[in-house]
Structure formats: C-alpha cells, structure tokens
Amino acid sequence: MFEHISALLETAIQYSVLLIERAIVGLFRLTSLIINKVGTERDFVVVINLNVPQPSMRDQLYIALDLIGRLPPPIAFSAAEQIVSGVVPLIQTPDIVR
Image (cartoon, rainbow, N blue to C red; front, side, top):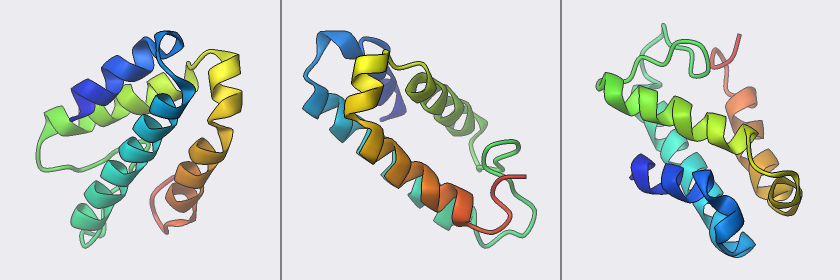
C-alpha cells in the first residue's frame, strides 16, 4: 500500500491534484491505523522511533511522510488542508512526537 502511495507522491506533478489529495488522506489514515494498533504500548514515538511490528512498514511510512514534505509547491498548496488535517492528530496524540 505504501509503495503505491509513495509512487503517486513521487510523481505528483503528473497526476490530478484530487488524486494526490486522496493519496495523502489515505496515507494519514494508514498512519492512524498503525498508531492505534501500536498505541497500546507505552514506549513508542512515531516521527522519531515508531515501534511497528514490521520494520519495513516503519521505513515505508517514513519515506511516504518525507515525500509529502517534498511535494512541489503548487501541489502542496492545493493539498494543504489534507496535509494539516493529517498532521494535527499526529501532533496532538500524547507521546507521539518529541
């Protein structure tokens, strides 16, 4: 799943902004599911140390989130609402970011 979303975000300029917005929303939904699944453990940090059962999933998540940060400005501007809507819950979750 992350591979597909990452491929879309890497070549975002070639696709419709609406498709990229949906990919961003999907990425943050997956991130939320991972956090909620792992969230019962007390010692995890998503952005710095995400203790996901499969290290490859954690690495894919980091890559996908990094791609959002490197979106071309016109696309980032168009998808800003979806990006902020996904980042805010991550930041507001206790013990996620430090």
